[in-house]
Length: 178
Image 1 (cartoon, one colour):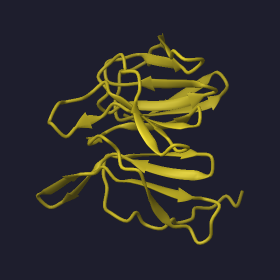
Image 2 (cartoon, rainbow, N blue to C red):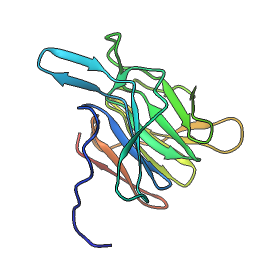
Image 3 (tube, helix red, strand yellow):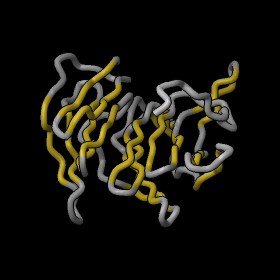
Image 4 (cartoon, rainbow, N blue to C red):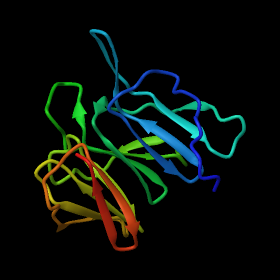
C-alpha cells in the first residue's frame, strides 16, 4: 500500500538456504543452516512473525522433524509445505515433503516429490501446489479430498534449480532466476 521497503526485525539466528512463506497473517521461516566460518549448523528451528502485531517480533514455532536446506516452502490448504531440499546426511537431494499444521502445531509426512528436490521451487494457485526442480518439469499436486493428485503439467523453457516460481494469475506461472 505504501509502495516502499520496510526493514523487519532480524531473525534470532543467522540462517542460509532456508525459505519463507506467508500463511494468513503470519510469516514463517523454515529450513536452512547457519554458516559461521568453518562451523556449519543445520537448523530445525521454525520462526513465525504475526504481521498484525506491533511491534513485529519473531516467535518460535514447533521445530521441524528434519534437517534440510535448499527447500521450498509454500502455504496452501491452511498448512505449510516444506518441499525437498538437501538433508544433513550429505545426500544431494531428497523427495521428502513435510507438512506443518498451525492449528495443531504438528509436523507430518506429505506425499513425496516425483523428482529430486534439491533447489526446488514452489508456487500456489488455488488449491494446487506447483513445484519444479533440477531436470524436472512443473508438477501439480492437487489438494482436493483425501488423496493428493500429482501430475506433470508443463516444462520450463530451460531446466533450472534454485529458482523461484510466482503465480501471476489464476492460470499463469512465472519462473525467475536459477
